Image (cartoon, rainbow, N blue to C red):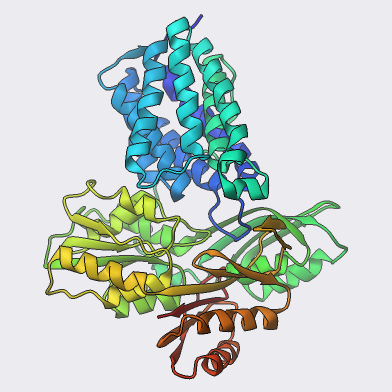
Length: 542
């Protein structure tokens, strides 16, 4: 019978959870309903709790409250994507309940989990049932009931897991989107893996810390003499393909050799494993899909990582920039062209991120603190980054206002609407209104086979999305382009902007623009080299 846990025990539980979910992240990613390439639930939850593990490994807190506080702070700062932010909120409430406690009994453990649920529900503007919120709530309520029966923490957590698994299985019936796809909720699955791993740790089951779960700690190097611009290839791209045809991997080596360096291609009869440094990960992944389906993928921006390292090492840089003006703007986007555009429009800071690269709360907070203004407006420009950005409110002495832009065009319109002479409240209203007038159509590719809204989607198909919802999918680009043009015409726009990505030539972009002009003779059509990965086109109509 386990009656109490202390700081050491809780630390081991968090480490066990981080290592275990890292090993299951691809399994969780596969539960994502929509097949668009993105940061994915499993990857985001793994990186979020992995940040807590990294912090805990540096310290040896004896009191449970100290361990909970360290973990909660690291989770919040490392939170990526909606699933990562909600996970951080669940453990923020847990830590709040454990305040000043050197150890905790079964009842306190159960109520701490329930307090985490209350914190998450209060912080999420529109809680959706059939998600990680539902699973964690029903699991925690069961834990509280169990703690009234027994003081054995093992018993309480076991009951919590049993109830959570039942709730997880029922998410397919609660959420219409999950029901259509006939899958359980990915975030709820991740949460249950975490709780099970915590119980396993408490029962003495050891976990092996893999390199991906906890990179080896190295002595600090001085990168300040090395310019970020000297990094020739920005993106470290790693993936595994399940072989589906007899296409020779040597052809892939030749293809990658023309795009980057540090190339490693290893293959056997079932898979091809690839590592390459390059500037166009979208093109790399598209080519990879011609060999088979993606089993796993990781894309890291090495320039961004280097910039962050330099920022840490240059101690003379103030933690929070002094206010030199009333308002400033921080925007999130991916692609050199889009980054340049936001800066030209007046953004003080631009964070490289978006699909496949959800920045953490700490990434966003750092850029906010670098902005020399009293109020900082944040443009997330991606629906999966809004919640992470919102956590920055109250984490700095600056007044932070998050404009919930879900697409890059919404962010552009919001920024154009900014009047630096107006009050913060007037600016917020104007930016929200401007963003709301924009319609966004994007063209990308299907990362895997899927059935969505009764439409059968094949890996590698072109995917057209309207406001992040499926518009059409087809392997014929002309058919998809025609559908996009007709849809845009239905909005009767005055202005159409075509932002083309790194895998699209200027001639191809101009050809699409001509189709849009034919369908919209009264609209002004502009073409911009966005240079974004993943999306061939981002099209705005307003």
